[in-house]
Image (cartoon, rainbow, N blue to C red; front, top):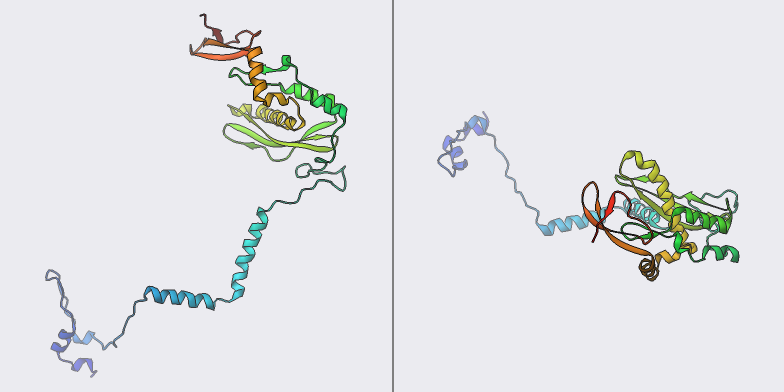
Length: 269
């Protein structure tokens, strides 16, 4: 017979703790189901002990395990650094214009070309939008470039992919002249329906051309606030109109010699 079976029942009942609540039912345990269990002491790990354990485990980690993390960080920092610019290609006949800066600021253009590019614009060529913004039609920029560099002596090269969002199209272009990079600009154009995306892509290119021409001094007056105020005072007028369909009244700006366009009608004073 085992030692547990020779213990009296009262001794086992004394070892069992009494329930705190009298409402709970207490299940009796037979002496045969009990076995002697050795006493164990449980220590809870205090914050100081955890700190010591962390420090010990950190010291035990070999230095080789930390090298991959340092290498990964170094690779990440390398990706953030700008790549060196290629200003002069070894083979000018084979240039990747999506990334190259070949010919940028190497030498100025001829005096004849500079005179055409920096010539004052003709006020008759300037147009006015209904919201008062003045601009030069895109075809005027092309005529100035053709006169300065000759037809075929300049071009627009894409520098990025075409990005189409829910409402607009954007792409980066580079203006090239005589085999040299002249300027870089990002064009953008809004559209309203999916069928208008192809037209917006072409308008995006025209917008980039206009922005690139700023670096050449073409129509630079249009970015001068004093010229804008003087031009509008001499050549523009503001008219109160009514939309013939929606009957909404508003104020638009147009040239003095122009008539109110459809679908607006001028309100009589």
